[in-house]
Every structure is written in structure tokens, then in C-alpha cells.
Length: 298
Image (cartoon, rainbow, N blue to C red; front, side, top):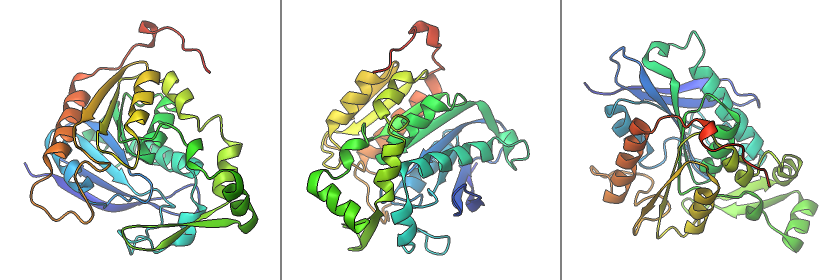
């Protein structure tokens, strides 16, 4: 059976912008494990090979959902371009956590159109890069999540902000710009991003969240990742109570893919990550917390 797709479904966000979501699944009427995928920084749901990953997971029997964070800079009219750069500048980690919660709640509503094709007791979160950090925090907060997978994930948000004179200049100007290497665009970060992080520093501590996890966690990272150090995978492995580490030899930050993705075949390293992810989601059962006892917070 070919996979079915419902694309660009609009979910009302909490922050005055819609969240667009895609569903990819076998429309066979049978309940399936749910997979929710979160893109990373300067990412979007239609980037590169994410669609192909969704198709592969749907073929394997999962109900796959990917979505755009509401303030990622894309628009419903321009799905793969950063046309709303003001929204990009207004984004922050709390908005992304709220967006992910809205997606989870929307799918699990009693009147969700495809509710009979989802197993509400088998919910997998997958996050790439910055989206991985968001997923770690949400998996620690949201008790309905049963498995966590992070791909080339960050392990700390605080270290990604400017310091010293650069931070002072950002506060004074109210904005700093970062170049999107793919398009050459200058994308803004408004100072509210840092202020919001500071206000919610405890909640946004990935280490603290990882130590609180009560579920299996697959940590995949490429040995040739120049965007996020492989050491960050080591951090997550150290902190997570029930981790599995998948180190992928010679893989970069996006596991050999790119945008746009126009090839027939996926790179071998990305196929490997997808297949190992499918195996993990099919074989790992929810960990009972009493196996580990209580975790002390740092």
C-alpha cells in the first residue's frame, strides 16, 4: 500500500501565527505508533530529505508528523523560503516548546480526523539539531511521550548566545544578524530571544531535562559534524538514564543530505540512521522509572 499524505494542515498556535503540519501514513485504518519530527535552527518541515524520511517511516508502519515551528520564518505561501524574517527574529525556545505542545495536543484530540490510526500510548519524538534540544525538554515535561530520538542534537542552549561585548552590543542595538549560508539572507535575532532564555533558564536547561527522562533515548550523531560537536552527543548519553548511542562514521550534520533534495536514493549514512531509528522505535518499550530510582538535579 502506498503512503497517504495530508499536507500543510493549519494548527492554531499560541503566539498569533499558524503551525503548518504534514501527515504521512498508510491509510489502512489500523492504529500505528506516532512519530512527531521537529526541525532545527534555520530549518523547516520541507527541508531536504525530511519528506523521504517520513515516507520511509510511514512504509515501516508509523504515523509520521512533521511541522513548521510557527516563527521559523517561512510562510504558508513560501514553504521553503524565509519570507517572514520579523517572525524569525521574534522566535525563541519557549515559543518552540509551546508549538510542539500544540501539535501533540492537536493530534490527540478526540475529534482528530485520523485518531483511529494512532496509538496514543506509543508516541515518539524526533528532533534534529536545535529541535533535538527542544524534544529533550518536552519529553521530560510531557508524560505521554514514550520514546525520544535526537539527531545531531545540541546539548546546551546557553553556550549558543554571544558573550561580553557582543552581548552588550546586541542589547544596545536590540538586534543582531546572522547570515543564512544557503540563501545569503541576513536573518535577525531580536534581543528578546536572549531575555526570554534568561527568564526561563531553569526550564531550558537540557542537562537537567535529560536527567529527568523516564523513557528510552536514541542519540544519533555523525563523526564529521562540524555544526554541532560530537561531544554534545556524549553529554546527552552521559545524562540520559536510558540512552542508546548511534555514532555514524563520516556523517555530517545532516547525514549526507542537502536542500533541495532531488536524488532518487538517500545517502547510505542517512538510510542507516532512519533504519536504526525504526528498529529503536519498534523494539524499545517504555522504561519503568523504578528501575533507576530518583534522579538528583544539579
